Image (cartoon, rainbow, N blue to C red; front, side, top):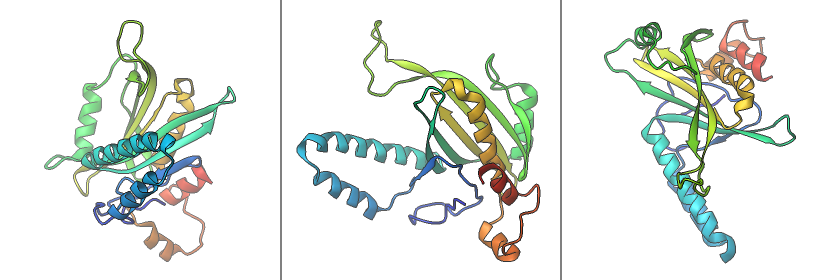
Length: 235
């Protein structure tokens, strides 16, 4: 179970917990200064022919982590799974908390769904029942710039379609909305990734799993609980 309490001291205190499915590797969104210094030391020790490229990747990682921290991303994981063509399908899973001070997040999301705000021809907002309470799921396909690719024949940045899904879960205790998002360029696998997204959303819980484990011991999780959802969806 992922806990935002562990790791760097700059991490926000955990207000919720969740699990990630098989095939995903968790990234450290809040790396410590010591960790970054050690990465820099390792890069400096690389041979000249690979050091420059490694340094570019390192700088990109630092910028991306900084942007995620600004947007209160509490977890990020990279997924790699075999596809039907014998290759590999990649995806990025992020979990964040969006504050809504002075607003009931559940009422705001219901109003958003009823009004149809944010809907397009290819996306819609649909309510979904989760072990942690009611949520709302939406997904769409749009084009995104391909990093490092040469411009197209018109001189415009190269782009390709990507699928993006999100489940919004109201957290009425903290006037916030938990956003579980999944993005992949494997648009043809959208149905499979939608199931993965909903599977992660079903594991979101507002109860510290360490307390639950201490109370329940090794007993079988109760059907309908977040612990049962974790075992059902991810083994």
